[in-house]
Length: 215
Image 1 (cartoon, rainbow, N blue to C red):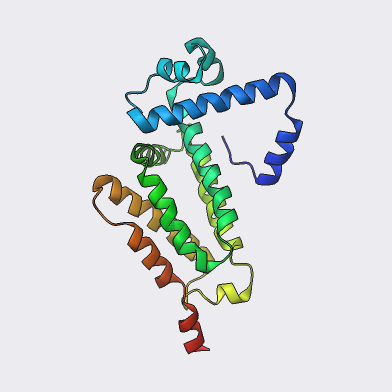
Image 2: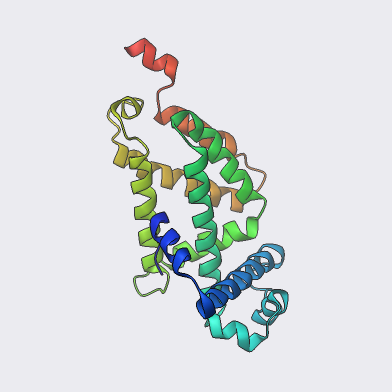
């Protein structure tokens, strides 16, 4: 499993015809059904038969597309990641929008706590090199870091970083903070993690007033 860049996705969609188009559409229906079941009932309480029924196919038909529930879970989480990346590219035009976007992202995750918990569990399991999702998570983090660095394309944006912090280091810090805050919230769901993520953005990037003071 690997992430495909947006240009490749467009090409793939353009080539999708005939039986393959039907297969892709059926897989998408199964993934939507699984995502809803996992969010509503949890991973352990969602059987493949229940997911198949929700998707409008037989159990055998589902197994034609996905070997087991673990593979289906990985696809559900990959779909969520892809949606969020596209949304981030559309909504975040600069540093000033980053804090509010991340706050909204965490709030959306909090509305589906079971998916948040499943993502954390799968990411931890995938730390083993022989895990089926290991390559996916390695490439996911690489892509996330690269997108962050590319999002600081000019000298003006890079100079907003606090002195001594490189874009590459900031990208790693962002992943650590987002993942850590969500793990803490899963453990203690009355904990405020939205405020800290916006505070972190302010700590990492100088605000316009700060930049003016040091100019």
